[in-house]
Length: 517
DNA sequence: GGTCCTTTGAAGGAC
DNA sequence: GTCCTTCAAAGGACC
Image (cartoon, rainbow, N blue to C red; front, top):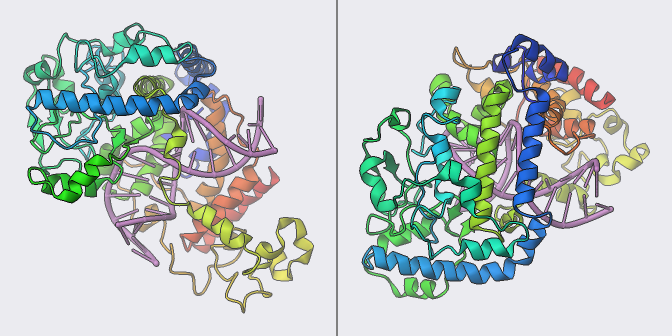
């Protein structure tokens, strides 16, 4: 459980250490009115999982995978239909195909100010996002009922029927949250506050934003509640709002091409249209991501931080400091997000997006270290199982003398503990040689102070995270490789930081705890 | 321009 | 069932 009773997110230096079930109990004692207990939240999460499983099917994932082929056909049909709808609604002005758009969605009741999930009633502040998109907005466009009373472009029934056990009318499941005000896109404009702008940089082909003032009674809490709305080249996407989860395959460049080729399409464009690229359907945001999107701007404003890494650290701590109720709301939102995502893309799999990013640094490091042809240190050459073959310094986690001349093992960035036990390298690699963001600039008052020592914090984070998983009722067991994670993180972090010696000492202490684990 | 950093949670593959 | 990896957002920093 991420709850922290010891100072919440303000005590950055020891929060991770303090994440313990004992604290949870203490917190519960301190907050007797909190109806949510540890078990409650776990039950909640469990129920969410169960509900999803019930709604889908035990083999929903397999079914989704198995329906990939069908989905491809459906996606194509869906696209075609959207194009048709597009042409119908914009008079054919919007010609840029390949933008499967999410159907429009009215503000769900659950997110209205008087709802149980109202930010105004649950302290979950609604912060104007830096990109003008409310974190919960990503939920909205999932509904496919809102764009058209009888959405012909979304054969949900068909899709649902394809999924064993997923045959459900979303109205039953989601109507309470996504009920419509009998309107579509055309009706929302006069009554609904929204900001229409591109969710993603470059998504707005015209590069401008539209902001509508709020006329919705009681919408003060949402007066800045922006709806993501991609404007087509003509200024308005025919189908209203694309879902933020959908990203054109080539991203910004493609949109820029839309900008330039709005009315005069080069032949290259025409060729591209003949070969529509599959849009990238992004993963639905999890609870923490939703929380981050909402609170990021707030943290930025409070702490005058800009680096996302530092901000995310703060947000992570604040996330732990959130009450169960507050967290439960985000879990619920995330669950709905997943449900909607699953309904819209029943055959989508998170695996589909694998490989979208280049290989991770870790993977690269593994590759390099695993290369027997270019051993850079005893550790890489012989591995952990043959430590007896290591040179003495390597055994003592010092610089490797065997392969040092070969140009390796001198960097604290190694995956071993040399970064912690050894003083900073006199000639650290410029690569990734950056101080920890929170060390680079002091946190402003009111912000969670940075950890007393970054290494200590880092080294302690994995266990804390493990506790978090447990506390959250994560069905998975907490990582039992604390030492491994600790080592990995220690080396990783130290790589990007010439931590002071004091920090290294602190890290060494933490490391001891970890390795003993 | 691409990647990393940094966070937590979800998903899926491997064993 | 457990472990591990990847991706989701974000924007500055780095190469």
